[in-house]
Amino acid sequence: MSTLTSNFLTPTGREEAWRFTPLKRLKGLHDVGTVLADHPSLSLSSNIAGVTISSQPSFETPPSSTTDDVVVQRVREKATSVTVVSIAANAEIDEPIFLKRTSLGGSAEAARTIIRAGVHSRSTVVVENVGTATLAEEIEIILEPGSSLRFITLQEWENDAVHLGRHHAIIGKDASFTSVVITVGGSLVRLLPTVEYAGPGASADMYGLYFAGNGQHLEHRIHVDHNIGHAKSRVNYKGALSGDGARTVWIGDVFIRAAADGTDTYELNRNLLLSDGARADSVPNLEIETGDIVGAGHASTTGRFDDEQLFYLESRGIPESEAKRLVIRGFFLEILSKIAIEAVEERIMDRIDIELSKVDIA
Amino acid sequence: MSTLEIKNLHVSVTTEEGAKEILRGVDLTINSGETHAIMGPNGSGKSTLAYSIAGHPKYTVTAGTVTLDGADVLAMSVDERAKAGLFLAMQYPVEVPGVSVSNFLRTSVTAIRGEAPKVRTWVGEVKEAMTALSMDPAFSERNVNEGFSGGEKKRHEILQMELLKPKIAILDETDSGLDVDALRIVSEGVNRIKESNDLGIMLITHYTRILRYIKPDFVHVFAAGRIVEAGGPELANKLEENGYAEYVTA
Image: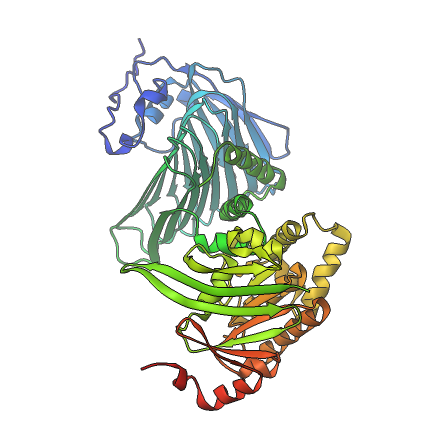
């Protein structure tokens, strides 16, 4: 019996944070009684100058943030080691740093990762999730002052994977963080892309794309904590759903604290329902404790195809099914182009095309 | 030689109060090489005629026929009508986010011609058509109609007409929102395409201004959902002087 017994209780589904999630499909990841294997599963695809990766004991590398998420708490308890990826100070790295998830099996596993972008460094990190897994993870991303990091996570899981994770960025003074979260695979994916700020002039641009097919539950719970003044955030997530039981949940919590003068924030979520039997929940939530801000806003839409767009394309000889594909590709392009790696963009679009071909889009 | 034949066309739309009849028996025949101006007051049903022929799902045909060279247009899907040789230049072209003009044109031309244009000749073909309409080549990288000015939208419509080479084109208020320079460029484009393709044109307009640039062979006055008077170009001059007052029942 571990001495670090969790103070947290297994969620019942009645909690606000869990009310959208089908707990039965989590393969026990949320249950304090389930055995979680410790598995530092991310590895560097190739050696790149200015990038180091190491495994460190958990007790020497405590978390840099607090969390109230039960699953993340359990990850912190169970992971005995942490994978630490460091980008050297002042390094300007053009080629993307690919971190590949390896050798995950069907058993429940926990993984902790820290990515540290050194002072004034500039880089792109891509986390590639493929295959099948039952994974609970936490990635903490620390941006030191003046650094610029593009952080891309690709959930290209097989359609039986279960993946719960928190990707939390702490953005230093004048640092800029861009995240692109792509979720096109998995039976159940529940991600918490969250940010907080460590200095003024910090900015976060958070983009997301998800496509849920038959029976997939894809949940993204964004949390932006404007804990200090003069920081900026932009959130733009787009999703499409098609097929029976396709389900997406988007929560956009933006919290502007009393001390956060000069905050500038806007969040947006758009969902495209491609067939009957799919359901998208979209809950933007803005909480403001100071009036002295530059701007704060949000928008959320969920709808079907625009008849006028389809008519326009069809009136130029383009068959209905192809017109719909064009519209969907166009809808996603805004987000996809933020990856800025052509081969990856094409791979994701191909995956979406395959999912689209499986269903009759309405 | 192609012929678009509209006979006794009745069209309704669904409103909150139930079906409302907009077109009440339209008869019109357009042959290749002919330009027919359809003129009438706002709300007379001119645009409904255009959209009904193109197959917009909002409109229900309750009676009558539309044929192109004998083929039943009303039985065709929207894309089949375009493939048969009909083209509608829209008054309000629709924005399609994330779809570039070049991708759109190529997809459209591939569908109409039944095969993808050869890369080598295609680039030149598009460039030539754009130059003729005084369009910047960078235009093709923009998203379809997104952020286009009124003049750019109309030029883009005529550019499509040039590349798709229809048999019969319906120009719905193509003159609206154009300044004099843009009107001249767009009109010259229409005239050029008409000359080279023996195009038949249905030119829908409220004002006589565009008729100084595109000369009609026939002028039809449209009021309350049907053609109420037909004549030659001189009828347009009469409308210029007297307006539509005599055709609108109080």
